[in-house]
Length: 280
Ligand SMILES: [Zn+2]
Image (cartoon, rainbow, N blue to C red; front, side, top):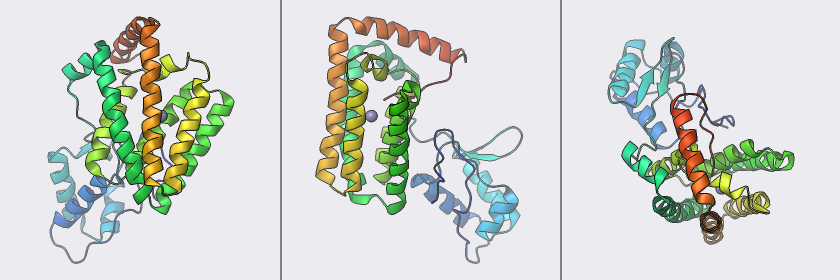
């Protein structure tokens, strides 16, 4: 399989590029890399093979490849890093500006708007995933769910939260719609930046971990069974549960505490002291 179960921070991609027939320009290579980014095969932070290897895979000369990379770089789709290497730039999921993120971080109303919106797009993503997931997609979901169960058994909260986001991300990819993926990623980014910390609140509730696991398994099962109606329902139920949990947390006065925690964590994260832990 293509992605070799790489998660989180991107990987060095190999053998996903196809030879280009007799092209003397960079256009074909540009088009192919763009398509791979659009389809979500190449993900943010993924490293492209070295020039020599990449030109071999495309079957183009190195000057032509260099033109292609330069063009993609100038348009902000690729970046190069110190010490070499070409990477997919952070373009997917850049939807919210900093002022909007700050609004969401400080106002419960915005956070509930977030969940209301997310419920709809998660439902849509799961529905599309049930219709469109390829055998490779399904294998990836199986693998993620396997790890999800294992970390639940171990009671590893942090890992569970990370796999949670990974799972939703994978469902988004299985939906095969770049616009949907883009907006979903923007939502997960709010989670991983610690702007919406629903996991932290929800973990305080009785049976929450078990309920979340059961909900994720229901989404997975419906997608695996190719049942779009059930997949949508399961995904929307999952987010509805989180919404209710947040309302309960707000009612019990927990909101204030969490809100302060969140601001503290963000301040620390911006100071580079903590890594951003994904939650959702
Ligand atoms: Zn979830």
